[in-house]
Image 1 (tube, rainbow, N blue to C red):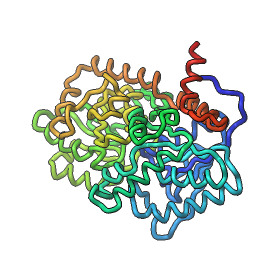
Image 2 (image 1 turned 120 degrees about the vertical axis):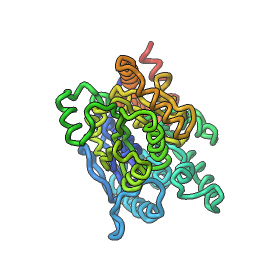
Image 3 (image 1 turned 90 degrees about the vertical axis):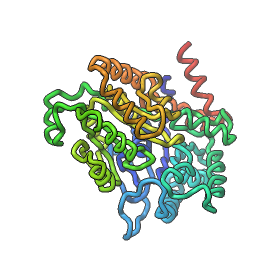
Length: 418
């Protein structure tokens, strides 16, 4: 899909989160902003006050409060006042420097983006990364019996309809939106992707990997399992540790490198309680820019996410690093891995242990073949450059007043392939 010879766009990207904090949602915001910037567009990211700057992006932060400077992951009551402060910052910004496009992430961003769009006439593109209320349920922030659940679900549906076009982080997300009544012509799946140049196993020598293993205190002659992401129950981290406990009753030729935050102390204690503390190495928060070399140490990757609505971008990092990957059979996992994943047949610790055991028993040749196939799949279908070109076509269609902007990508793809 060729770049149209139009002027660069001024893009306001709303990120109602503590950007950048080295986990999935933030990676999508960062990579989209970086690829659009590389294509010549002017991208400004508005975010909460906490987080770190990365990649030379123009990040403007809302005002903070003296009693909360920690990183908050997922649903939180703190977001009420943070969203208010972000809204004030955003109104000041759009009145002083009107953008061409408002690109809003997450439902809070979608609602704020709708208000800014009404205020200025600037079209809104909503980036849908999963169900708001499902995330709240996953994080145990609210229950289905809570008096706020139904009003929040109604608000979520309204926000889903507010954008001129909705970009979804998976094809399954597009299905969810269609079920909520969003017209198909306004939905464009833009799955989470990977930068295969950064996540490239051939970048690192055996000597570099051996030195890093030694630094981390990893056993050199055991198969290394790797996990990178948030340490939470809905990500399946508890199930993963229980699965390893099951496996230790059968074999002792593996070790887990567990990379992530926030609940490091909780899961370290769980590992000790299960008697597997000696086979798990915790790194804490892993900076995104150093993640590839740590994944390069692995023999097998694990993505045991339980959520059926959110994306699972870590899978793409894994397969781009040519790692055989284990996951549950969620719609998003199957979308990313296809027939090349190693799937647990149900969301239980014994089933996950069985899948890990299957992977550990594979020959080196089989693992290598599966890894190469996965990397080829990532490079062919899931690159940020490809998604960046599609987002630009969507912007073009939105700004031209196309009533079905999502269809513009299909038309442009057909024209290129003729």
